[in-house]
Structure formats: C-alpha cells, structure tokens
Length: 257
Image (cartoon, rainbow, N blue to C red; front, top):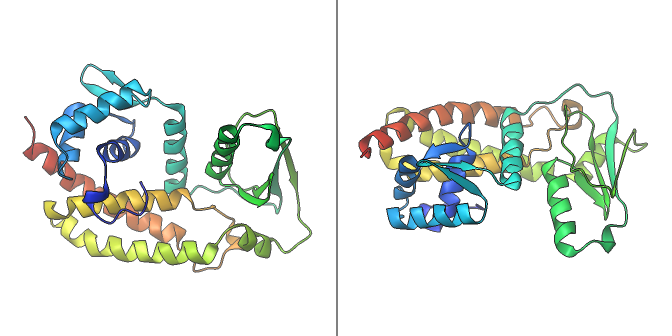
C-alpha cells in the first residue's frame, strides 16, 4: 500500500496483507480477516475471492479456516517491517558495509529489480550503479544469497555524516516522521476512549507508519542529529498500536458469528 488517506483507496488484497503482515505469527482465521475488510466496505464474497486468489498465487496458505502468509518475499517484507519497528542497532566502530554487484547488466531486468529490492530491504543505499553502502551497525543483517555480490567492509576517507546524507534523504524522512507523530496523536485519544469510528482511518495510518519505519536506515547516532525522530515515532506507535488493537478486538467481538 502506498500513501493511502482513506479506506476507499484500499483493495481487499491490500487490507488482508496488511492485517496478516501486522500479526505475529502472520496467521489468522478467515472470519477475522473478513471482519477487517468489512471496515472498508469490502463485501465478504470479495474478501473470500481475494483470499482464494492469494492462495492460488502462493502468497498465503489455507488451513482449516485459517490463512497464513507463506510467500518468501512477503515473509522477508514482514521481517524487514519488524526490524524497522524494533529499531535495533548495534555498536558502530566506524566501518561501512559495501556490496558491489558484479556483472549486473547481464541479468534479466526482473532479476535486477528483485536484487535492488532485496538490497533496499536490507537498508543499504546505492552510491552509484552497482555499489551499495551502509554503516556496519545492524546485527545479523540479511543480504540476498547471490553469487554476483562482492561484500566488503572498510572505512571511507570522506566525512561519514556527509556520506550518509548523500545516500539517504534524512531531512525528508525526519519531516514525514514528525507528520506521522502528529497524526498518531490525533487518533490516540479516540482509540483509548474505545471509539470504533476511527478504526478505518487508524488502520490506514498504522500501515503508513509501518511502511515508513521499514525505510528507516537505522544509522548510528553519530551520523544523525540529536532530534532524529525514529525512536520517538516507535514509542508513539507502540502506545497507539495497543489502543488500536483493543478497539479492533471489540469490533471483532461485535461481528462474531
């Protein structure tokens, strides 16, 4: 999903995937999935058809009235989402991870696009075509197992803070984080009061926050200013998510067969 501002922009598949990706483990009974799509005016038949198509495409698996995410790319997406939500960073000794793609131009376009997506998901940024970098401060970073990748670790001669700003638009990420925190603050009160009327807007906002956290480069503190809002956004979102899930459970109870 991308830049949704209201439920009318959401498809049944988008809603179903967002619910499953936000659940641990990513497995739910069909009745709860159908109840969630009803928040957006999506009929039960439409939701069940979408689930059947997702199962046929190998995205989910049906098991005795439950659906579970099984597609490797979706599982990787969920893992990246959880990394962003936790914001775990290790100590940093000043070294950088460098991944060079050898003979990338000889690969089919879809394979090149898939590799770029994998490296972006691992929170590397492209310095120039075929050269990807990031500070080496994320524990157990998952790189795609590709033969064409050459992995190096070194220390750049240039100012590392300037290099980080060349690789990521940190100001734009920070500004959007502040906007998301403002919107979370507007909804947390109604949610904590149990207002089911904000569930639709809250769902869209929750998905947007998780998408944004997936793009947090998780840089060492030395490379971002002290006002970097990533951790504050995570704290706000955890409070918000607890309140949202409580109201969503009341919605499920109200629509339980």
